[in-house]
Image (cartoon, rainbow, N blue to C red; front, side):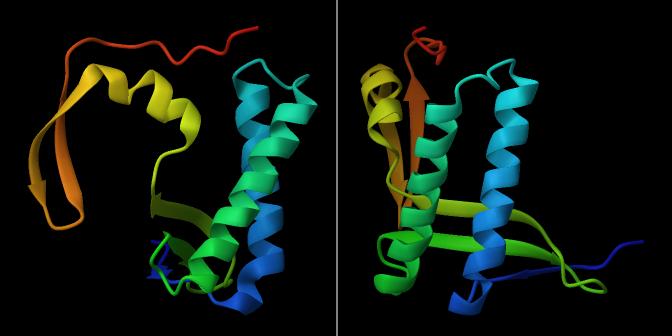
Length: 121
């Protein structure tokens, strides 16, 4: 069985994380049939890099990343990020939600309807 380490990124991880983000974004767009949207992929990649920088610069206050690393190979195999949702999600999703409960940094929400997040093409 594979041993996975979950840890906070360090500034020295930045170049590898940037490449990881690019790979994941390109793969996701391709799997969704949107590989031709190169400008959108570039925008997504730029944003993700800015979010990582915001994590380091704000000392975890604006953004907060965790990364999953293979214990044996030290390869980054996943990331998760916590922070304010982007403008697209705020416009589309939050309009249909109400806060049910707040507990520390967590909000429990209830949606009033399902909203498609399809891209306007």
